[in-house]
Length: 415
Image (cartoon, rainbow, N blue to C red; front, side, top):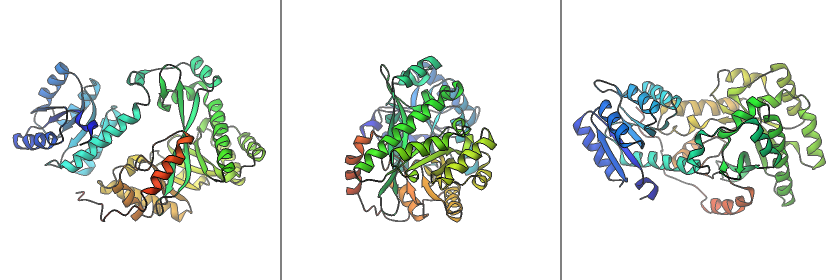
């Protein structure tokens, strides 16, 4: 049993006595550290307010008195749990709406289950929670509410405290690594390694994002040069803020830098988040068109999370479509998510674009994407973001796991 799972604290909210007993026995079988039950939303809230927050709440939706939807809102507003699992056999469309609502309130939604609880499925969700918590431990828990001002961030940029971690992207058919995504981390002298959620928003509002992006591109180009000296032509994808796309000098700057370093432009993949396109259409489209003209790869990131996806595909010459993890991570358990992933792959291929699935967390998810003919994958099943010098050891271990040939099918009953 995973020691991380055994250390969890869980509360089960279920009004039906028999279903509550079954759920309690199922969770107990995983030997979690602290397990509590409640027969009503009011009882659950009272307990949590008296005893303190838990890691995960497993709750139904259709209950007398305060229903599960209202309960989840109170749970989030009072910060009485970190994660939630929805326990319901109701229509999938309703469950998805509740899950989206919970996420909007700041809760970590692990997924949903029908009654009675499947121990195998529950273990998967708890392991996912533990992996996400491990990821967040790269920065202290107390830093969740940290706010840095423009002066602090500017000094950190000048002191070269921002570095790049690299997450491998591999071919689904062979497992071969062909590129990486460069992800910014702040090596804070006192707080340790901080993720972008703690500094990117302020950088964008303060105007520092352009300076930061330029520095990160320089670091990425240095790493590409090092790999080329080692006779490896690994492409690097790097996130580009829409703010920098209005700089029409960007293509000339990148072209000159890459010529000076003798790096082919196709080895730099500029990833543009679909949900934030585009600030100034005329200038941004000029920049993107010139980048494409000169051989750079353009990737539309988090595809499907914005409100104008089709328009962006039509007006911008993307070469790669990245399917957002919110669809990928649950595609094996949700027929709607599976349909969205499948449609995105088909659309991208018809437009002569490569497809990359983000957030691949399980062997089951890997197999499904392979069956759906997705081209590439990245996620914790493959590798976490890491410093460049750790990639060779990871690659050796990863290739030793090939070929990946799990049994079929991976799709369970999703009704």
